[in-house]
Each structure stands twice: as C-alpha cells, then as structure tokens.
Length: 391
Image (cartoon, rainbow, N blue to C red):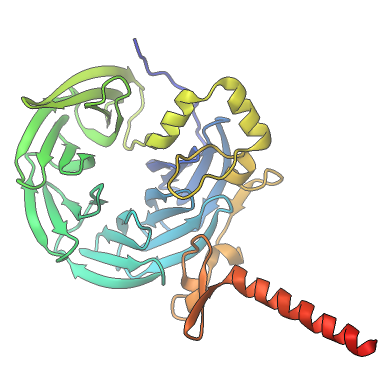
C-alpha cells in the first residue's frame, strides 16, 4: 500500500511557522512569526534563502502561475514577489491592521485581501492599487476564489459568505457547526470545510446544503488540500493536517448515491501541525512520468520553457532559485526589494510584470521589444546615410 514518510526536516525559522505554499516549479515557501519567508528547493531538499521584508508575522503565502508569489503580514501589507529573482516588486498598503489572507484571480489581474480591520480589499494588479474597499463588518480569516472564479468565499469564524463576482454581493451564506480554520474546493460547486471538531464537511455552494460529513478522528483540522486521484478518475484526494500531529490522505468519491470517503494513508508526524500545502497538480503528474535519468538531466541542463497553458515541465535550479553563486537573502535595505512608495510610484513601476509588457505610445500600443527593434533599424539607417555622405 501507499505510505507517507518524512523526506526532510528543517529548523531554520526562529519562530512559529504559520503558513506554507508550494510553487509549480517545486519551491516550498514558509512564513513565520519571526517575520521571514524561507525558501526551499524540494528537488534537492535544501534551503535556498531567506526573504526579509515584512515587519510583522507572515500570515499567508500564495503562488500565482510560475511568476509571482504573494505574502500577507500582521504589518498590514501584501507583498508581491518575482519568482526566481525573489525581488519584492510591490508592497500593497491600505489595511489598518493585520492581513490574514490573500487570493489571486486566475487571470492574475485581480487579488482579494482580508484581515483584522474588517474590510475586503480588491486590488488591481495591473496598477498595484486598490480598486475597491468593502466593509464586511467582521474579521475574515480566509478568502478564496472558486475554481472557475465565478464566486469567492470569505470565512469568518463559523460563517462562510459566498460572493458573486458579477454583483460583488453575498448570494449565499453557510453556517458551520464549528469554527472553520481550513477550506478547499473539491469541485466548482463543492466546498470542503474543516475546523475545531476534527470533522470535514462538504457543502454545495449553490444550495448551501451540507452534502456529506466524515470524522477524521483528530482534535482540530488546521489544513486542507486536494488533488486528483490517479487510480480513480471519479475520485478526489483530500489531505488533512491536524494540530494533534496527524497528517491523513483521504479518497473522496462522488456518485449518484452521493459522496463517500475512505482513508488512503496516514502518519503521526509528532509535530503540532498548523498549515499544509501540496505540490500543484501538473507538477505531480510530470513527476510520475519522469524517470530518475530525466531528472538528473533536468538538473544539469534545465528544461525548455512551455508555451502558454501547455503542460508545464521542470526547469533548471538556477532558473528556479536564482543564481547559486550567492544565497538569496534580500533585506528591506535592498532597493529592488523595498520598491517605490505608493504615492510616488509611476504607472510603469507599479505594474506587476507580465510576459511581454506593453507601453503606451500615442494611440498605438507597442511592446518594448518592438520599440527596441524600431530603434535599432533607425540607428542602422542613420549610420548607412552617414557612410554615403562620406563617399
């Protein structure tokens, strides 16, 4: 049968680890009450550096695509990081208290953040400025987009509000029997909820009805993460992390009769677990098909960049981590990390970089690459004209 075992352990944080996230490139990021973010290469199972930017505990971390990482902190800010170079491109300011959660729209153009100041802030990531501020009248612990991004969920204690993207208003409210500390979408309309009683509840977000419940036989669920079930196309794997140290993987199956659950594997970690992350789906599938020889080749040569939304492949460690010549250790003093002030930043500086950025030139919009090519051609024509005059 399948079993879980410890791959590696690290004790580099000097405070409590409050959040973890894993990128599609296989980088593990951990945020702590020591105000730092640690980065680890899961392929080599080693630490690759420390990010020092926030002036408070790091409360949540989220990766978006292959390019960006988002961090929230008790200092009231949201940091936007460039993956690979590990520079803090922008610090989003506006919250009047600790920020507990951030969620990035699949398009990468919008982000939601919520925290202790009882507001939900919608950020325009093209300008890195706040687009809307919504008074939700309660402290939100979690904000989460649905897989199709048609709705988003805000969790506050035992209540889960479902918001419509079209109206930005609450369309449904779910009331749990326990304080909710973890949520995860199993399907576009099915939400898994875990918390104080060690139970997992499944809700249909369209009807707000609980469609299934099972007991993990633990005291408190602190983390939920789901992924595909390789040996059952109709099933879903759900991992649960509990504060009593148990890490369990369940197989959930949906049929006409309803949902059912079966314990797949478990391990007592002997630690007090408070967060959980799993390797994104595409990376998992790629790893299953790669042999050891291919992996060694990848480490030496790196792999080619994939196009658009094609299946993603691994990349060289240098591309993932940045240069290996010196350890990644960015501080607030670094100009690239601290960025520019919100009020003084230009539109170009405030933008979160995306592939082939566009810059405005009169009525026509041209890319920076096109501009450079035009300049080179003009320079070549000018030089050719000068030579003719000399003759």
